[in-house]
Length: 113
Ligand code: FES
Image 1 (cartoon, rainbow, N blue to C red):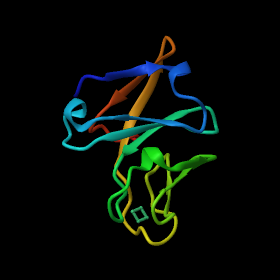
Image 2 (image 1 turned 120 degrees about the horizontal axis):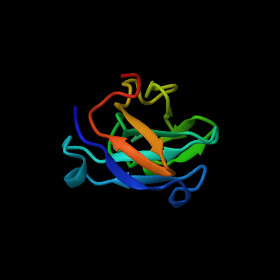
Image 3 (image 1 turned 135 degrees about the horizontal axis):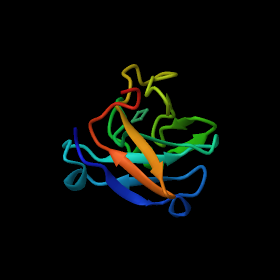
Image 4 (image 1 turned 30 degrees about the vertical axis):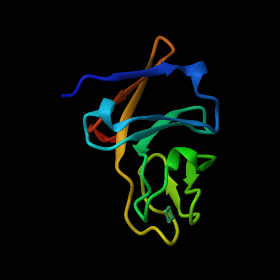
């Protein structure tokens, strides 16, 4: 089981925003975007869109979905599922926990696991 990374306090990521943890830190070989969704919870997906090259952390959060800033595919923040074209491949999820107002990311551990 991987050790969590402290992304910051819950106040560091505004609702509807994301913070990207760079690949050098995640240890998974990929950057990970940690989102503060509009349901008040935090979720994490691989930052790079599964369609081409784009930072999902730069996308637009709506409810519990994020829209890619390049070609507007949408992904479910809970499951990573690609919800509309042009993306057809799910984004990898990562577990996020909030402990004592700190946002903890578990790279490589699926959100459901
Ligand atoms: S790069 Fe994200 S939809 Fe094309």
